[in-house]
Length: 253
Length: 256
Ligand code: HEM
Ligand code: SF4
Ligand code: SF4
Ligand code: FES
Image 1 (tube, chains in turn cyan, blue):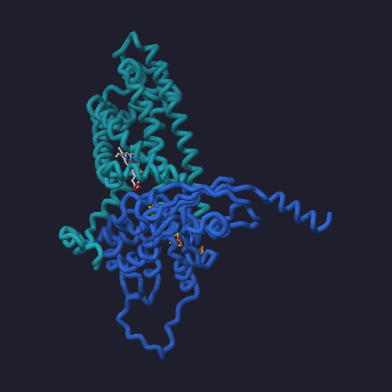
Image 2: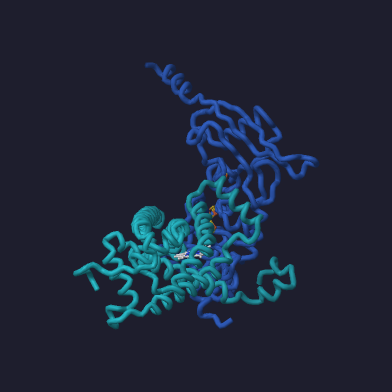
């Protein structure tokens, strides 16, 4: 069919029939991206319970350890969740990798194109690739720690890790890259599949971009505030590293 | 105020000096090197880049190469990079821009010289590759009346048929800059157009063979440069999304 592209013998095999794999990859990339995005939107809010009080954050960790279902805590649940997210992340990365510029030539062509074109959505894609690449490393470190030390999550344990364990620089960069990546990704996802297109796709796109920006500002704001709160706690607690939090009298058990 | 002073005042207001920088290079001239030439001219009321370029060729440099046919945004010959963005020169008013303007030929296409590129060659290759014509087994009988078509459908097909093959969407697509095998929005739009047409007997499996790969719809990264620069304002984003949904459906149900 594609005579013009059958120059090389390898192409003849590849182009005998179009494989179903590209369709599957595109689908998998979007589904995993969407699941991860939902997860992140919840995750940052849950961590921000520290802004309410130490007790609220403590209750939240107990909730995820299953205390309110089983009457006991099972940190294994956290390990399991972290492992599941890790696997989804790996699948997402594998699918998304095919979009990366595959050599310096491609990268520099895209950079030049994006700089001269001054087109917002083209530039946003570059941000998505860069933040995605950064998360490769940052998210892996974070997820591995959560998988292996699921019991060490709580108002003091987390704050100690952030301050005395020197995780705050990593969390700071991770927060900014994950929020940018997630909401640029969701915006692109909607346009890619034609969600919420309505009668006037151009107008809908403008509205979606506004929502994207608002969500980025909101999540980075709340994330930074929460990180700040953990840092304050961590500094205050730095002479008692390792001691665990006990909820206040009358606080939620 | 009489008509004369009014006219003079208008002239005064319009008499802006503009500088037009042009990336010049002719691969057919031995030893020619790419360079940027600057031309200074006086802006006239309602001046388009088409008028400005003709002014330059007439009064400054007769060797300047650029293409025009219709001067009305219909033929698609005059597309070029205007301050880095693809657009039609005949439809661009100089008054909408800063006084210093940069013009360059559309990237990716074969360069004839200066601002003139061979889009036709590229588009022909694309049309052959995507087989952009009605596929049917029916014998054509010119005596018989054509089959009827709902006006809404005819309207919808016509909307996509308005593509003038100017290549702006190609020049505005970051994907195709990196991966030249990609069919681009112009190609995907054409497939969407034939898919709508009941006279074309191809089904989605046939279209999957044409665009169901990374050079086709799954290569598109939804950068939407195409949508934002198309001078005919074709609904490229929603048509690509539509084609993607249909092609994923085929792919997910395929065995191999
Ligand atoms: C919590 C982590 C992550 C979330 C929430 C997330 C979310 C998303 C979403 C929603 C999309 C849009 C999906 C689509 O276009 O089909 C996307 C695309 C993308 N993701 Fe992620 N992602 C995450 C991690 C990563 C990582 C670690 C990488 C590293 C390589 C990555 C690389 C990419 C790339 C390159 C794209 C763009 C693909 C394209 O343009 O088609 N992502 N991501
Ligand atoms: S789709 Fe638009 S930009 Fe692309 S070739 Fe056709 S008219 Fe030009
Ligand atoms: S949406 Fe982007 S990647 Fe897709 S064809 Fe248009 S410009 Fe190219
Ligand atoms: S000269 Fe025909 S489109 Fe500009």
